[in-house]
Amino acid sequence: MGKVVLIGAGPGAADLITVRGARILAQADVVLYDALAGQELLDLCPNAIKVPVGKRHGQRSTAQAAINRLLVEYAQSHALVVRLKGGDPMLFGRADEELAALERAGIDVAVVPGITTAFAAAAATLQPLTKRGIARSVAFFTSSSAPELPDTTQLPDSDTLIQYMGGQKALQTAELLLAQGRPPELPVIIVENCSLPDQRIERLTLAGLTQGLSDRSGPVLVMIGAAFADRTAN
Ligand SMILES: C[S@@+](CC[C@H](N)C(=O)[O-])C[C@H]1O[C@@H](n2cnc3c(N)ncnc32)[C@H](O)[C@@H]1O
Image 1 (cartoon, protein in one colour):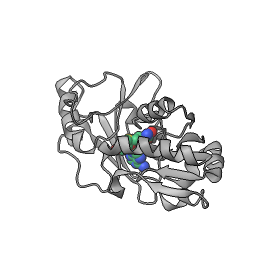
Image 2 (cartoon, rainbow, N blue to C red):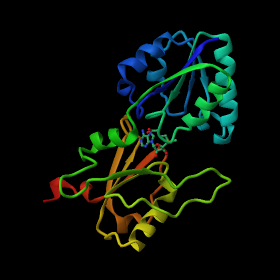
Image 3 (cartoon, protein in one colour):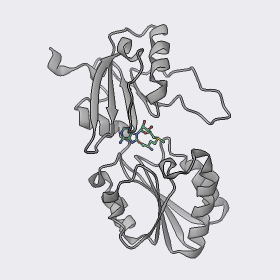
């Protein structure tokens, strides 16, 4: 029986994976990877069998049960199986389902943390998520939920809000926040393809966000809060 390691790949740039993550990846016999893992990251495991399991590889997100099954099957025939996940595996990564499946099958499992997109986006925009006297709480949230559950209309009331998987929900988020009394001029930053060569950073306000986001091809992180005021604007 082999071992499975869930490794956080970071936001996309190959050199943002941790040293531990890269070391274990290089030793892997099999790597199951998400759509966001680019060729440079896969080059870190030249000898591994590489199995694409991300949505953009034709799998639907509802195929999670199939991914769980593959992890168990590969671990039954290979010594070291890596599940390479975008950002940090423990945030919006369905790691609980994979861990549960492996634990049920009695397979040894470990997790290597990764840089979650929020931290990479803070670095890319040079905008800290907290700010003394202005922002002392941060919430990572998503409005997406399992297809069988209704979308939540409850938003966290932290000073800084970071919305994952928010591209299509951004308009609804902005309207809810305005209805809750957040000011229309509240700064918003949209980061698309964070850390990748086609990274795009757009600054707007909460009022501007009610117009929705124009067409995006890459993953998008929505950052909202007074901490994101543009320092260069004063
Ligand atoms: C399923 S969640 C995975 C989050 C991941 N576990 C993390 O810690 O960053 C996918 C969402 O993360 C965000 N995301 C991931 N990579 C990104 C990137 N390079 N640029 C912008 N947003 C990204 C987007 O909001 C995307 O819809």
